[in-house]
Image (tube, rainbow, N blue to C red; front, side, top):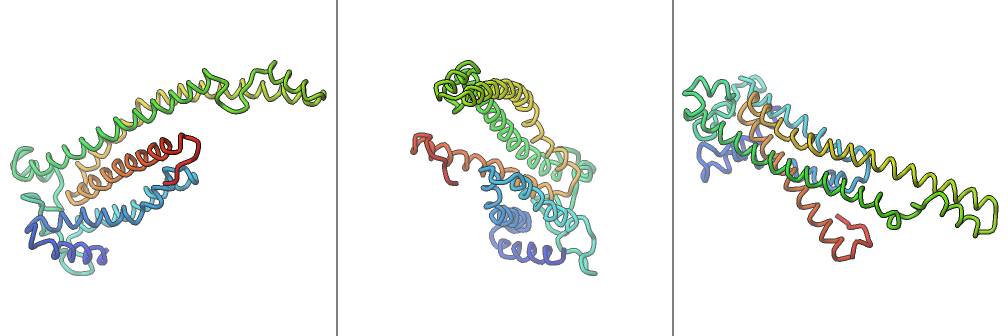
Length: 263
C-alpha cells in the first residue's frame, strides 16, 4: 500500500501547479486510467468472447486495486508514518471523507455535501448510459435470435425433419435417410431452445442494466477517493465497450458481414 500511496502522491505533485488542492483527486483519476489501459487487452478479449475467463479477469484484477485505494484513504498511518493522502481534498471535501461525514458538515447541500452530490450525479449519468446500452444490446440479441428462429433458411443446417429425411434419401442410402431425419429433429430442438433463450434474454435485458446503479450505493459508503475510482473505471468500461462495438459494426459493414471483425 505504501507503494500506491507514494505513486499517487507523486502524481499529485506533478499536477499540483495546475490543479492546486484537487491535484491528488486528478492523480487518482489518472492512476485509474493507467490501470484500465493495462487491462485493455483483456477487456478486448472478453468482448470478442475469446475465453470464458476473459470476461472475469478485468473485474477480478481490479479488486486488489480498489481494496488498496480503500485502505489508503481509510488508514491514519501508512508504513508507520502519518498518511499524507488524508490531507488532500477535492474542492471542499477531504478525499478520505465519506458521505455520512459530509452530511454532518453542513448537510447534503453544504460545501462537502455538494461534492458528493456531484460525484453521485456523474455516477448516475454513467449508470444510465450503461443501462441504455445494455437494453439495446439485449434487444438486438433477442431480435437476432427471433429472426433466426423465424427464418430457418438463414442458419446453416436448420431444416425440417421431413426435409432432412428427403435429403438423406436422395443420397441413396438408408443411413443417409436416418441421418437426415435426425438432423432435422435436432434442428427443431435447437429452434425450441433458441425461443427459450430469447425469453430469458428478454427478461434479463430488463433487469441486468439496472445493476449499474449499484455503484451509487457503494460510492455512498466508501471514501471519496474510492468513489472517484469507481466513477472513472465505470465510465471507462462503458466507453470502452461502446468503442469496441462501434469498431465491430464498422468492420462488419466494410466486409458485408461475411468475415469476423478483428478488434
